[in-house]
Image 1 (cartoon, rainbow, N blue to C red):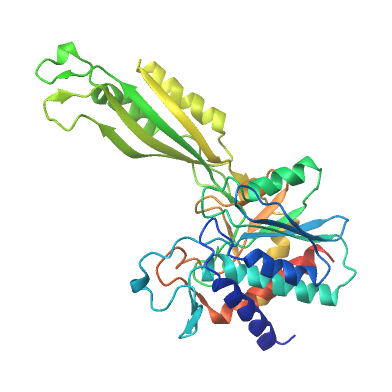
Image 2 (spheres, rainbow, N blue to C red):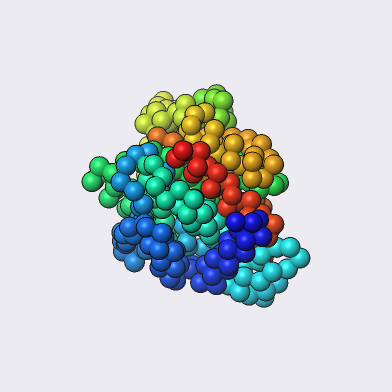
Length: 381
């Protein structure tokens, strides 16, 4: 196919997906549209829906290696409609860009996945190994019934994955300049430090949790949790919210509540971070409790076959030599990494994601699709 034909096919499918208002956790028929295209080229399509969330596992082939293309059809809410330059679900073109919710995050990637696979299968109908899609409508929301449920189902029946490409928007200045080869873990804590409420004029009758906790919090903020590594920055501890008091200026509060978060590298563990926090608080002899919640463990794909395949394909398609990075928040890659040894993320420029007037450069559509096709070919030669 010519560059113009690849562009036209990818744009047509992107617009078809974008005009479906799939605000999380709703799919709005996106998966049916994609599944129909995949079934036409020999994929076995299976729905693994959960609690109103739409999930698709589609596979072509029965042997290994298994190359998975993963992503999500759900999008975040639009925000104030009057601030958009066009209807966010009209997929309108303006000045070289395609505007609309999901343009960059991540319906262009989904369309590029499909058109890339269609060309690859047409050219290699007897390709070795297997190709698969893992798609969900629960990535932008609570992410409890989406990719994680598909992963659990695959794990239960012993279905292996060797390589996974997640279509998240990872590029910074130009499509092709960055691949995410891992993500930091995210560990949240809700800390309550208890004191004794009393009149502020009689502090000897109470116990001020703010005063008592200040030294411990300062120590936690100053700790070097780890030094990071080649791919990860050092683990970060940040307090995001503090609440105490009754609203009156003459009352010592009876408790103080804090929310904090660790963004942690593979040099630290959930258990290790928890233990160090408790050690500090116990040493300061505080009366406290913590409710912990883990959003996701860190994952890392080192330099190997998948990163090499992606780097070569991206450079050939876009002219950019991508860098490897683990910056940013979490993604569904954290779930897939529990059953897949090599997971990377690659997609278009992320500058407008979740914003008013989200957009993608029209000229990037064909190169993005060709990059995915090249990576698949490199892995299934």
